[in-house]
Structures are given as C-alpha cells and as structure tokens.
Length: 345
Image (cartoon, rainbow, N blue to C red):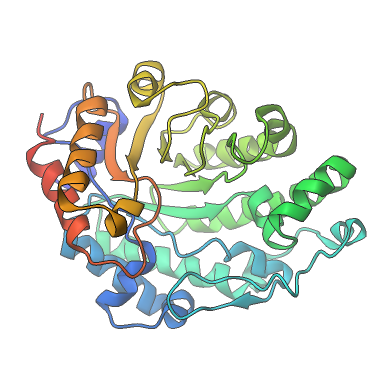
C-alpha cells in the first residue's frame, strides 16, 4: 500500500495497513539542501527540492507546503524580515495598516502580481510532478483574518475589531476574494487539497462568536470553492481550545491539524469520541518536545496519540505544529518508525 492509498483510506475513516504519519518538517527541510532560510523561502526550486527530499528521507505519507505565514500578506505590499534561523515575518515597524482608516486601502488584488504567491504555486507544481500520485500534496494557505493581521499586527487588529468591526470585516472580505482566486490557481497545479490556517479560531485568541462573525462566512466561502473544484479542505490551528464544532459547521473539512483538544472536550479521548467520525484528526504531538524532551517522552507522546486516535481510521500521526526549524531530525525519524510499527492495524 502506498501513501496515497493509505491516506485515502484514512480520510474515509477506514483502517489502512497502518496510521499515516507526517511530522510537519516545513522550514527544517532547508537544511537537507544546505540552503539559507531566506533562499529557501524565496526560491521555488530550492523549496520544492527540500520538501521532496524530506518526503523521501523520512518516508512521509504526505507533503503539506507550509513555508511561512507571510506569503499572502505580501500581495498588499507588506515588508518582510527574513531572519537567518527562523521563518520570515512582517516588519511590524513598517506595517501597511497603521490606523482604522488604512483598512479602506485593502482591496482585492491580482494574486499573479504577488511574487511569493506565484512562488508557492510553482512549488506546488514541482511537488505534484515529483509525487506522481504516490502521496498526497496539500497546499498551505493562511486564512483571511490571519493575513489581515499580518498587515496590522494581531493585538492592534483585535482592538480594531472592538472599535469598528465592520471596517475590519470589509477588509478581510476583500482579502478573501484574492485568496479565493489564489486557491483556484493552487488547485489547478494538481494538489489534492488546501489546508487553511484559521489562527483566530481558538479560545486562546478570540471568542467563538467573534471568530464566526469575523471570519466564519469567509472561510466557508473558501471551503465551498475548493470542494467545488473536487479538492480536499483541511484546517490547521495549533491554538489552545480551538473551535472544532464551528469550523466543521462552516468548512466541513476532511481533516483538522491541531495541537490541543478542542474547546468542548476535556482531553484527546473525548475529542476522538466526539469528532473522530466527523473529520480526520491530524496531530497532536507537541513539537516543543523535539527540543526540550527526552527520547522516552517523545516515544510516549507518539504512542499515546496513536492509542487514543487510531481506532476506525480517521487519524494521521503528526506534530501539532511545525517541526522546530533548527532541531535534529532524529525525532522525526522516530515518529515515522512508531507509525510503521506501533501504528499497524
């Protein structure tokens, strides 16, 4: 059974030969091709080569094209900083939105004018070609509210929502129209689906009602669009107390990548009981333990997730967020080994 067959069975809530696995290698992959973080983040050939090599090196069951969360915001002219050893991020000393009035400047743009969006599309094309149908390729896209926050900063945008929610909502809707066309172009590369990062849909950031009011309808539109193109919709949210129920209602995702139990579940056991037949659960091993834990703890965490989640399929063993960019790869290899041995059905 190849990875594509294994993942398809899992998404259909059937037990395959074993649980699929993918530690979210992301920016750590740059080290496999000896690239700087900046070059890896900007050059489609380098980025794609590293992700393809990571899949082969660690025998991952899929590739999720997480580069960083700053790809989309550059379409509106946001300046970025490219640190040597971590993901690119906005220069918050020079943001596009400096006041409530500035939100009115945010209009739909042509994604084809955005160098980083086009680079990501090219990465998807190259990986799909290399995969040759043997494993799924899922593109990673930051949602509209998250993208908007990169043009302002999270704290100030949050306060702006209290002061003038309509103005913020209108700007997010303009961004969403760009993301919708961007998603079309991504799907046309042949990827199996798109994973949207819904950063704000967690109790650690904003209330469920506020999130639904500000972004719910927008991500629903994106999800319906991707489903309409025959693609998979997945969600990534590594926040605490994320809103599975509301996101499933809005997006009907085939899978949710997460780190903590949802807000209406006391633990992962209840999460499996409540949502295991509604979506595929992806995670939720803490990547911090790659750096701060010992080998025994890492193995225990991987096995605990497998014990709780594997029954009846609908589970992929993964880190709950991206693998530390500068960490040793031994824990990634160990996670895959555990899936292949302990994760057998």
